[in-house]
View 1 (cartoon, rainbow, N blue to C red):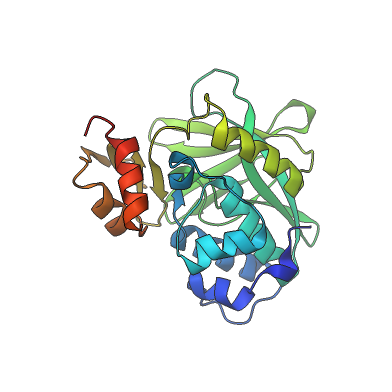
View 2 (cartoon, rainbow, N blue to C red):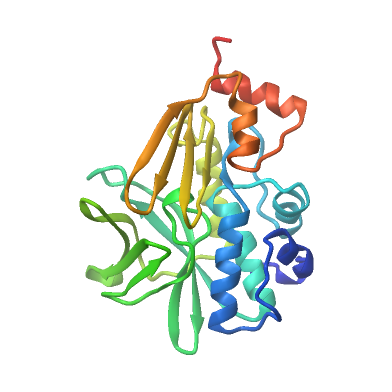
Length: 273
């Protein structure tokens, strides 16, 4: 389903720095691959900001995220992860979620995540929720709670089979997103991708967004604001001026751009310059 036969698995594993030994369709591999992917491939919308089309076929994803060592947003990240997991032998299904980090407003279903079924247990897998996402798979069961290097996640069940991924912070539990049990396919990711990359109401249009999840500190750049957060809730914020943008994308997020891309992003970041 996810185009696994087109993926160069060895090159992908080298890109994410996988060091877990021989891969197999088991929980140890699932955890190790998920964490390595999240920590190695940054979340970013830069091609959307540049007005480019965002292809989700495996060859295009491998060329961009693996060969060019770029990042991507949820549809790219989780489509690539799905292909890798399917190639290893896992059973992978997509899900569509409503973001709940923006207050009480009802948001459309625009976030793409994965569910992996292994030995009768379902695991939420998500390499595409930016700095707030999990490092490793989370058990998809009501009341589940996991700690990942000080970052705590939980799952609760609501009516009609809806599950909610939550994060524990200093002020208490915070909902991240909710999703129904209906399975999505790559064609559904394509539809959501089209909205997020082209609709004028999309939050990815007209601004620079980059995230780098990590075990110790997590970085987020939205427009000209750079935020660094630790598991204990402490954070630092600063403004990134146009003269710092390319250096910040390179040094903090590991994203290298050519001169044409850099010039285009500077126009998005600082249109008055």
